[in-house]
Length: 273
Length: 358
Ligand SMILES: Nc1ncnc2c1ncn2[C@@H]1O[C@H](COP(=O)(O)OP(=O)(O)O)[C@@H](O)[C@H]1O
Image (cartoon, each protein chain N blue to C red):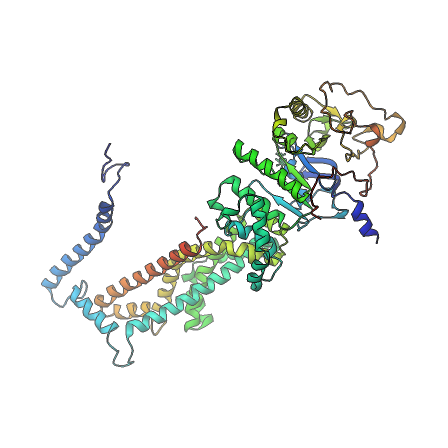
């Protein structure tokens, strides 16, 4: 029996069909945009809301491949490096703290009982709601931005690691002790290597939140960064800059996710989530 | 030194007056048990009677509500390298290959920055164990790439590298297919002989118990005592029978022998029949190491020593298994002592061939 190519629960599209189907919405979106942009610009060549591809290429050329007259830097590169640095420090800190806290809380009941309610409490506070507090406490420089990312992501990483270590069979811990492990060895030589892939998974999921907090912080108080630029040029309705920047951020996000997935597959062959 | 002297005469495993209660419910009720070095001691009993609980108490994963557990005369509580364990699953670490799993016990003796030299020093030993367990060709596979039987082979090797004084096994072959299970039983007997292991093995499979064991303990909640029927949930499982079995060399045929099936039937009767209730004074504790410390509530007559004559054992109609030199009569009354017996009792080892572990 031949299964249908598209319709019904038994649909089994051919490999080529899969590509066509997956690309179709993108093609459609681009086509709708180009058409709309074309008609608007025909109406009014100075319209800024839906710039043409040519206008966007010009903007990228100006920001990415030409040195800025005042600072002498490549603006887009500079923005990208500033933003990535904040994101890396914030998420990196979250990952380290979340891993150590989550693991120790799960293994040492004294620590778990002391901290789990607090961590849960912090994880429920909307980080953007305490943005003013963060700016007041940590100033408006790098530290505040990193802290926002950190506070926004570490509780979830902690809780996730806590949960997955708690879910490890008690047998594994007893077994390690019968193999002569001391308590700290249990944590750092038996449990830690086992939760590493899990940490990579939750960092992958936390990156979305990380970007959100990064751009929010940059939009409000910053002198550079991808979020800063987008909100700066918004005043001039410079969609020819905003759209390429958004695409660039999306690409960066995708690339990070892909890299982490590669690490997971290459280094943690035994891990199946 | 007296401690050293104690150690040489003390039984390998000694459990006395051990209780385990969960809330108001007693699971293990005044368990007394002594296991000699070299014994392959099997615990059977109805599902839920507390076999695994007893084993978890011996390894230290759970603590007894009361009573003592001693290894070579020294009290033990939390898990340590004196007792190795093989579980039905979760014995292996998923992030380590078979070889690394076996090496782990040695690696933990080294600081992490000396891992390389640890591997060099113990690789051959680990490979030798994997060879003995006939799994060496899969040394570089991860557990999720191995079948259940292969995983258990690795798990046994992993335990043996620490040379524990006693190896605890919790239904290790319970999840395996019949054929694989039989191979594993043969393997265990081989390793037991080769390494002179002392094994404490929990199973619900009576054929497995009689096939493997030099000693079969029956743990059961089906018995009576002088506390009367009102005791209810305050009464938990006891060792109701304790059989000494002659060690036959690799007895694949014996499974069909009449003595074999007879003993299986007898044990099923003693431990698994809710209608067959023996009094605590009349348990079939024929093994020379068996002992029993009853409380006055359990044995009302214990306070008056004169009247402790053995009562006729009503339904002991099944012929007991001929068990070597030891007589097959029910336990002599003298063994049902109401005072705790000291741990340093005379050991009468079944003396398996081969090198000793400890
Ligand atoms: N942590 C626990 N809390 C309450 N009851 C328990 C717990 N662990 C075991 N039990 C009870 O103890 C009894 C004995 O369990 P177990 O030792 O697993 O039996 P077996 O191994 O003989 O099948 C069971 O009835 C079980 O319900």
